[in-house]
Image (cartoon, rainbow, N blue to C red; front, side):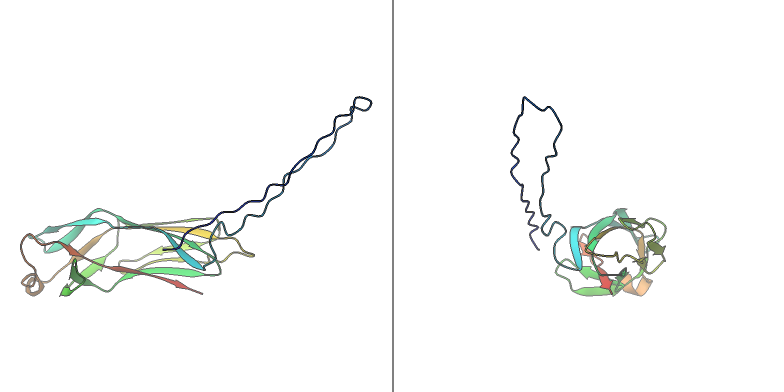
Length: 174
């Protein structure tokens, strides 16, 4: 995890009162924003896990709260979210194959780039046309929800009263 360092330089302002001339003058403050958005091209600002519950009748894991990923991107044009379609134990051991469907619960929002594009598919979420001129950043928020369906044979690989997870990979591309 990177630490965001914000620095500012405030110039001192000296004002002199003149009783003979009540004209107006100009006073300014100047300061450098420093690396307010960090120096990386794709930075995770939030990476919040979601929750899911298993429905034995349909052999489906349904999200009960979405996972949330917030990124600040610079010099990156596209961001993609995909799953490897594996049900894993909490120590990351794959135990079963699943078919992830991100629709309809997932959302994508983009701030800082009015002509950005978003696309929600059953197997991926994408944001594109994110690159800004200069050193500005674009903020991308993925709210990742949906379901993961197992086959009957795969259900034989899971245990009662055990916590499982499904990973989602976020990829930033030039």
